[in-house]
Image (tube, rainbow, N blue to C red; front, side, top):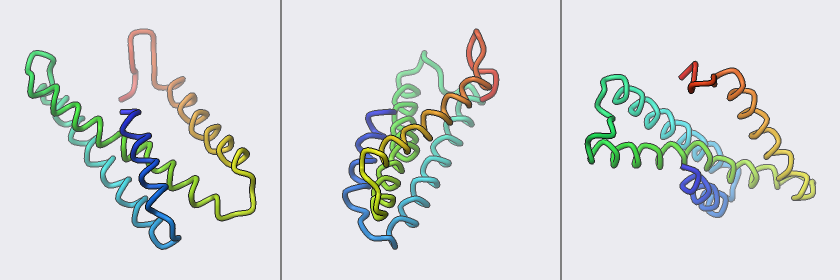
Length: 120
């Protein structure tokens, strides 16, 4: 999940250089993440994704790679888009990381309990 997000972020940041391509890339990231997470949720709710079947783990790996690449990959575009403004890159990267990690901390605080996630 995280490795695919890092790779996708680097590639999207490298190849999406113009302002016109940012919107298309973000829409593709959003659509891909939405589709992969919805498919994962449907397969899990129907009991198809279980640890007992080998193909289920491969399907889960593919879906996690797609969702990780698309949900974390947009950060590469975000850094590239904000680098168009006159700001030092260290402040820019720090600010983006603080927003991402702060949002994740708040969501984790309200969604997780002692025995796992309360809200999926």
